[in-house]
View 1 (tube, rainbow over the protein chains, first blue to last red):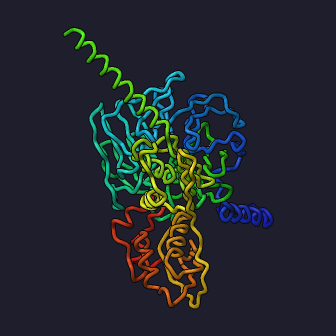
View 2 (spheres, rainbow over the protein chains, first blue to last red):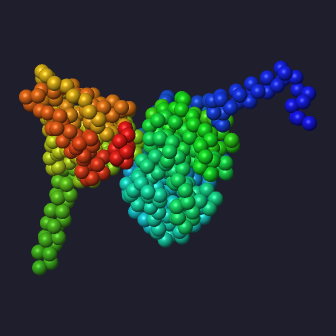
View 3 (cartoon, rainbow over the protein chains, first blue to last red):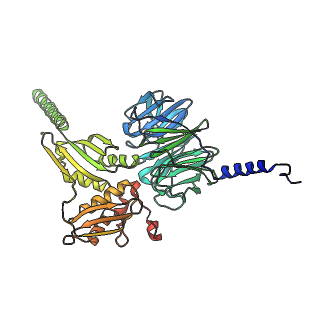
Length: 274
Length: 216
């Protein structure tokens, strides 16, 4: 017996219309919620990490780290940093790569400590820690520094082949993989914990500077800086969503409690999606 | 003998103190350098400019305003930094200086400003120049406008086409393309050296594979 038997003509038409509309409508993976405006506070957001309910933003232009409330008001600020870039967290503390001083800093109870690494990066743009491992996006050396228990290794060199980089700007551990925003090769590269290249994502998306990434169990989100876009991929590398409206030079993204936060460096606001 | 040693120690201490004070005074005597740089695009490139200038001995008070394209710093008077040196350093770092001003410790002001040549032109041309961003646009247009005999120059970021008006008595398309190659930008028949291309800031590194494929 046909499953459509018993459905009236009008109902059938409605079902077809719903299927048609849902297949040709705009991407609906993320729904815009609100903007957090930072213009008045003169914050040019370039990096974000959320620790518990604390939202920390790297304000590169003003050499500071700011903790903001849900409206963008400044609760706390740490000054005298040297161009903090894509921040992260380690043991519940903000992890801050200083592009200007080549140091990795940790904000420990209001005091800036230096996270000791053996390598000497030239303009660290991002860092992430997993147990005794640290990865650093070594911008001017076109490589990722990978230290295990204080022993220095490197992933990649300058180039555009798999496993090579052109100014990496963001790094993240997720599970047993390392994700790298290979900014000026306009793509994301994925490596295993031995530093072996596994796959490349987004190479055919015509990005112009893949500056920021965020990875969770479901998605890989990439900011496409010059094109004012945010792209979402599955872990298999399938493009799930492209958002191209309402951004102004997005530099970084983060997913927290089901919300996607996109930092607009030039626009001085954070776009929040559900 | 004891007095001689004591006198020697005192004179040494005095000399060291005078030297330290002279050094301190000289360190306080600083020239203020201000530049207007066009097209500071992404934060990584903009702060790369700052990083490259940090190598200048004694440089302090570095400030950069990406929105306004302002880049300023101070250097000890002994550095004797010239307008040309600042201009060259900014260009060598891959950026496009529009204005350089030095306020000497003495109060004297030196200034240079980029201006489009006010000349009569009798020929026009248009051709593809490879570039990718707003910083490229500034560099391409200013580089061409610095070639003696070129008046109007406009490059379109999307189509990659450069339109120029020039005085055929003073210059030609080949000279313009050579100037662009020296600045790191390829045209169909004149390519930049690897060194010049590599020296472009990160966001200006257009994909040379596109040129091989004939796409732009």
